[in-house]
Length: 333
Image 1 (tube, rainbow, N blue to C red):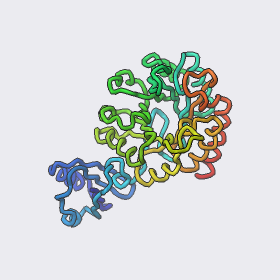
Image 2: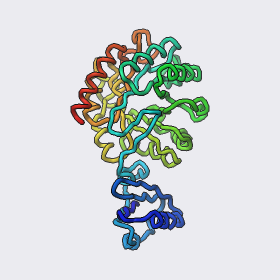
Image 3: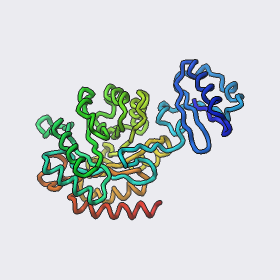
Image 4: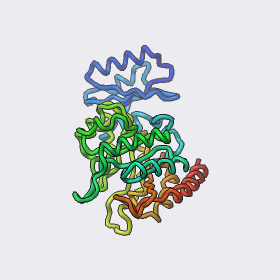
């Protein structure tokens, strides 16, 4: 349920109403916009008398929320959420670019790539350290050592870092990571999501390969219900009958999500297509669709990459792509 307050509502009046809701055993999420305040009431409101609440002097209107996701709902929070990571803002109308290799493989590799993407204008450095792989015999990542190398790359370039977590037991290794990524395979690892809800750190959740938009939002809800509202969503393609690409990039998810939630939405064209030649057109299409940012794999020697080389750009091509991305962003702004 949401209660929209009138513009002339004073802070004491608002506080008194919030306390009354809390006395009923409900949680209240406050969204102070430029022109109005929205109170999101979370809990069992079935016995609430909406007409009685609407008659209060400070209440403009009251509505029940029928969607299963509450905290992530734009009706609860009409203004776009902006997540700050160092000097980088995600969701403020600008375009954020996350770039780097699928896997951190060595100090020389990650430092070289970090410098290259920084020079091209990337905002955040990505690199896998704990790798979920289909085959148990494939490269599983450098784990804690890989995180330390990412930290060294951050010290060198100033770029914030993002890497994927697979298990809540590994959280202690991620204390110095700027953004924690939840991969597609873990999007519905609810115990992990609950643990991430108890920390104060941005969480990027990738859409599961066979998941609906509602299921993605419910995964975000798990984190937010725990108290962590710093959630970023990422469309990375879904599994369909089509075999020409690794996955099918659902760009319609971007405007759909924009209408449903206040959370920032990124697009990952690398995992979506699995093909180097498709990254540029899908990146530009993602920007045109209204994404808040892109997540692109870049490797200095893709032919030697220990994971996902065929879907990685070389630094020179990433640099050219960044120029085109800026042009598209300027064209639609």
